[in-house]
Amino acid sequence: MAFKACLALAALARAVDALSDAPSPDNFVRRGTTAAAVLGNYVYVDGGEISQYENGKIGNPASVTVNSTLSIDMSKSWTAGTVTIRTIPKTGPRKTNVQVWADPDTNSFYSWGGKWIGGVNMTKTELWKFTADGSGGGAWSVQDPANPNVFGGLIPGEFSAYTTAKGSGFLIGGIASGWTEIYRAKTQTIPGMLTFNIKSKVWENGTFSAGFSPFDTLSGASAQYVPTFGPNGLILVFGGWSPRVDAEPDIKVSPVFDLQNITFFDPETKKKYSQVTTGDVPPSPRGRFCTVGFEREGGYDIFLFGGMNQRAQTNFDDAYILSLPGFVWTKMPQNPAGNRAEHSCVAVGNRQVLSIGGTDMSWTKNDPAKQGLLLFDMTAMKWSDSYDAGAAAYEAPDTIKSWYTKK
Image 1 (cartoon, helix red, strand yellow):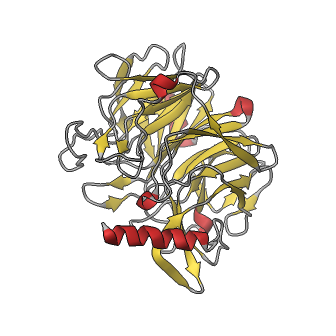
Image 2 (cartoon, rainbow, N blue to C red):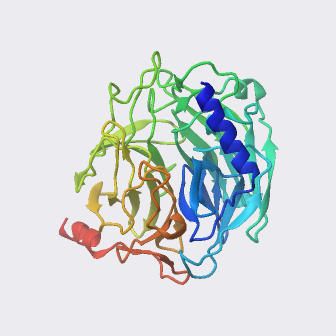
């Protein structure tokens, strides 16, 4: 414990030394464990860690907590090696693996949970709100709950599956530890699901046995809201694993959720369904990857990229599209920047995916992606280091169109 405390203090000292949260491309090494949201013409990046060169060397420890909120202007085209990443002072806690819920109606997003590296500067459990100013900046504030009694019983953690649907933030499962909640004595699996109504500020918390949550436990998965199917839309849940509640979470003995059988549920009724997929089914087990969805005429396509096989301690470099309503997987071309996990993805510029950060089991290996930014054109099925602000609207690539034509 003394060694860990020394590392934590060293990381804090280096952070105070004013390392850059957006170093130059030449000094950048890796960024990861972030979350991202699109508000207006800007992508905002919250939380995470960064490693960089300091006087020609990588520091010790290699990664430190990011102390700012970042923004990237998406109103004009750019390349990853030259784009300016703006830093915005963050008054809230500096954490990794936070979970965010975007609210485009008020040009804001909410940040929940996450982990303090080394348990440094921990504070009481709060929900933080970032309100954008429309020009790439913004400010943070604490968002008080409408029902504090329920809020007081919530367990903040990391590795939850989260999404925003029907005006509410959804969060399924997760892992709590002494670094995710002040005064917590042990690591614990978080059961069930919680929701946060963005308008009323009311929290709800429920379990699988009560019919509220689609899962008993879940860790490392990704959730994606599909608004165009069913009366209330559907929330699809991908990958992850199901650790026991009554023991330390252990991936080696926990059931995993493969990507051939997808679980989804109605965000209003909480009714759960499942569907077997076909095509190029991604290998499992897989967690800590990213997903992002694109609506098209007659359907909806979900991009899945990277992730980690924790049992084998390896990362993935592959990408796929799950096409709805066919529930068919199509493998995408190889990405040019190698394996990565613990990254975030957002839909930008009509038909591109922006992948932000990610590590390959190390904070000291230079990321082949400049500033950790990778782009994928969903229609052309091509990777790039360039963002096209004037790209045409999304149309399914020919390989996906042909599957429906043959049907």
